[in-house]
Image (cartoon, rainbow, N blue to C red; front, top):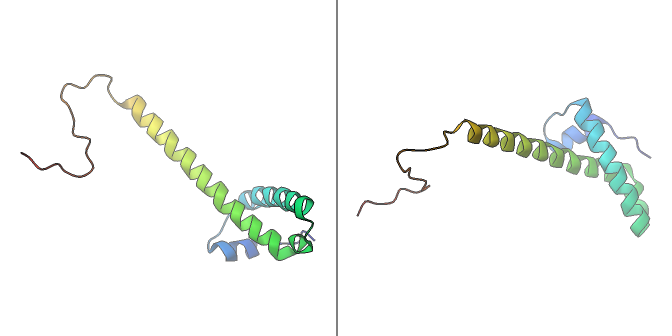
Length: 100
């Protein structure tokens, strides 16, 4: 019932993942599958292809979460390095404002 291979999930993702990432995503996918089956009782939920799709979903989600946390950490570090007081005002506009 739970027999899916890491290579299956990597094929769905289109890139490789570590064993740890696979195991974490698979654990989350199994919990979600069990919850869905408990709510709906559909036999299709128990099929291997469904678990593979859920595992792919969680692998993407977990990778995105990690990336977001890393970026937040970098921004936080950058803010700590920034001087407290700035002498001259800075232009924070993304698009240049034409001079009047």
